[in-house]
Image (cartoon, rainbow, N blue to C red; front, side, top):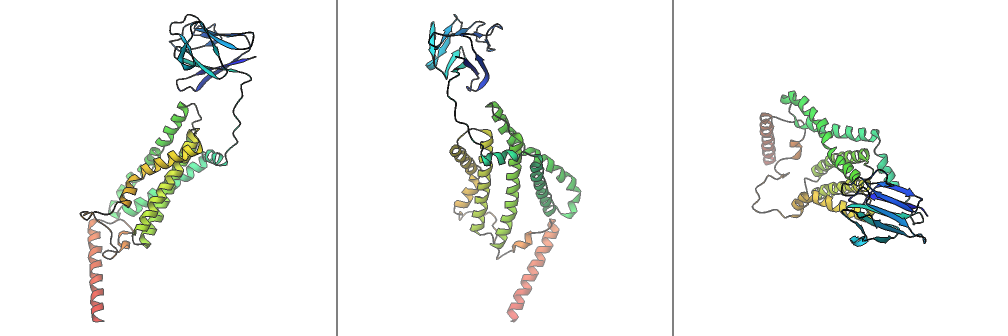
Length: 325
């Protein structure tokens, strides 16, 4: 009966896997061992695996400095039996033993959603979402930068690639986390998913501006805005955790919802907290100043004062015309 020896790291992830047909397997740092270990706390000839006549495997310690241990960290004095799938330790180095008849887990079918997430790593999707983000930032610059400050356009435009690079930090962290846990990094799908979420947030923000304008900034519009941003974050983190972990779907969804609510906690707090009577912060009131007054090309303070004076004159003229009627 063949034996399979797995070398594990400190997170008990497999770093090496060896299969042997002989009845003795020597373990240690010396180069004439069957399994060569590179842990400095392992002796050159640390231990040996032996199979008895009945086919059972035993771990024998070869008078090592730091000892050998089996399940429950029980020290191996002479020999200790090992069951298939059991972990043992040579000093701090973990090993796992299997026989070739050990059952394996059922094969997992491909997930349709998972395949779509991985397909998002194609460069065309990344480019599409990056262009949407760049277009959104160009529109924002066009709406907020006055004509008198047109010389600042190059500097503001240079901020766009910098912002796109900043959005790469989160996918890079997830990719490193995956590699640390010996899983596929999926950096490009993570990057595409992050760009998609930010692009969706930009489009959702534009829709919420339109909705707030038509509903005069009512509480319904504010609630819809916060709920939308939260759902976008839930979708983002669910996809992130699916690509970066092997958690169950329930665990992924629970953690994604918790992180999304934490990220939007400030918005939810301002939405659910009743306004204080002592709050003196500026609030929009459509009865005083119409919302279209704020829309359009950016203005200097002088232009703003002129438009404001013109608005007051129009309101005064309307009041006089109403009195004449």
